[in-house]
Image (cartoon, rainbow, N blue to C red; front, top):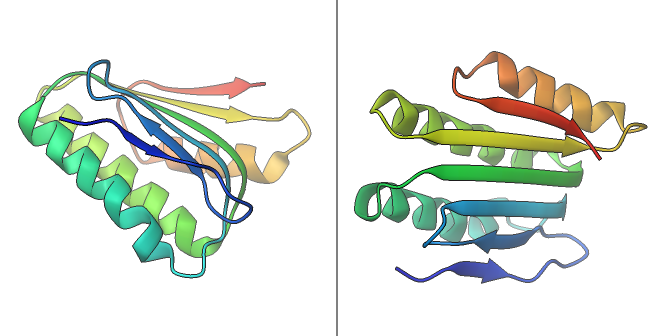
Length: 124
């Protein structure tokens, strides 16, 4: 299985998903013109990884800004990881936030309430 690497732009996240380690990073700001077009390869890769590789997933989220449709896709990804965890897989989520960015912190806190696998809020 190939890695998924997408360069960060002004309106889209940088993506670095490593198939051999299960380390997955989404970083930057997300307000793409078509959110579903941007997130489709991300969710497709994750589904394929969970079906074919079945290894540990560590999702590192380092956001500067998310629009509402991006938040929905991040929530959907967390739901998929929850199902993967419920099936016995090892999953960890690390949500990074700047100490002065209460919006990103609150998004992380809200997401953390909905899942029961290891989820760390990390101030950068």
